[in-house]
Image (cartoon, rainbow, N blue to C red):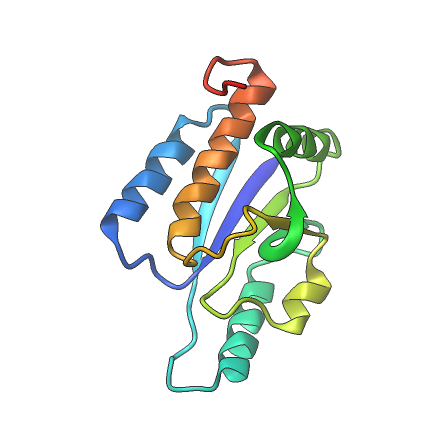
Length: 153
């Protein structure tokens, strides 16, 4: 299984990039790639921005991939439940693409293509900081799966 993570727009703070890189480098034996999807120009309306970003997101996704979007209205998991979810995805032998959208969320085309929606919290976070939170949760999930002593309950 391979994991692809799509981030819409450049990360504006090098500290966030550093945190994301650190957690993803810690994950061993899993092929993880990060792709930056160009963000739409802010001069357009929100709907036009979402539509442009949606077309770009879809262009980065292969038909055979399982797509999980990070969405505030998605399914909520504990860290252990997310690890179990991820382990089931591993056994299905399909590559997974996780998508962290832009500031305004996703277009209908992206929602239609998504196989799953995951919420990291009932709270709203900036699409920038979500990158670091998600990278840490992904690392945490793999430590749970591997039985490593990172996660405490």
